[in-house]
Amino acid sequence: MRFALDKEQEDLRSVVREFLADFSPEPVVRRLMAADASHDSPMWTKMCGELGLAGLAVPEEYGGAGFTFVELGIVLEELGRALAVTPFLTSVVMATTLLLASEDEQAKHDYLPGLADGRLIGTVALAEDAGKWTSESIGMRAAHTGEGWVLDGHKSFVLDLMSADLVLVVARAGDRLGVFAVEPGAAGLDRQPLPVLDQTRKQGRLTCVATPARLIGGWAAVDRMLDLTAIAVSAEMLGGAQRTLEMAVAYAGVRQQFGRPIGSFQAIKHKCATMLVEVEAARSAVYYALWAAATDAPGLAATASLTKAFCSDAYLLTAGENIQIHGGIGYTWEHPAHLYFKRAKNTALFLGDPDFHREQLARRIGI
Picture (cartoon, one colour):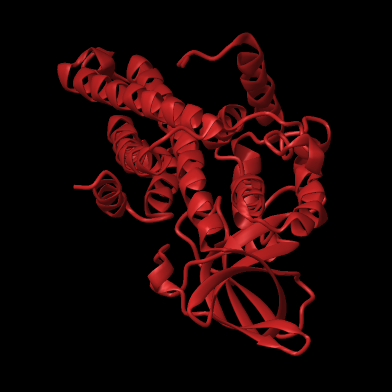
């Protein structure tokens, strides 16, 4: 096991960071926040076509590059650092992982090549009005007719729903749960945007009325997708937490009070030191979890819950302290500090809050 990245992985980080600096600076992020679209199409085309990021961890037999979850995590860390407005998490991680975990080889060959080259944008519809990500919370119904499966019900808080070309819906079919593929033009399908706290990550509400769907998997695939997504979003949070630390330290070095930089005051030193400890601990957790995902190590599920709980708390702390160190300007709309705090809060709730994942961890290790 190595906790250090090799040269190729560091080169990947450099390429992605440089790309995001050029194509997703803060003005672009703010423009996309105010737009209806969940991403910038030219930027997404470059990410998928020129850099090949969408197919990074997709096996070569399905049109991908065949790398591991470690490389995917490096990209996610940089996306979180830049607050990039893209469907990467939903399409490249959630939808792709769910398809890979299914046993439907035909569905894999039908959908994965499009997801891998960015022609298709996928998302997963699981949570409903209660906002829970558990099997017990699924209320949407699937029924088999003479012509195939149909879905009835609704889903809430679906990420990037409005721009998705493929929606993978989790529904209850009798006494079991299934994953169903639904395409945007399907009859009885309605998609509506939802108001969000974090405007860099759009959400929507999905309604199905006798909507035709294709059964592609069961709950076991969903379970794996949830664990891998928890690790992926933790990598995103690590990138955001690192950026808030950098912002806080830089400001503490130039902001003057009483004739000296505020970073020279003991209270500010303590805040920055605490932020650093949280970021480095989160980095250790994330890198171990990425290795575990890449190697399918024993205890992956427990690792996913532990990492998600810790990184959620760490990001909320660093994003909040960043605002405190910036003082009055940190509370203004014009300063980016609030964008990171909103992303931290939104992501902490995504897939379940830290308390939920601590309960999951206790259950998974038999406490």
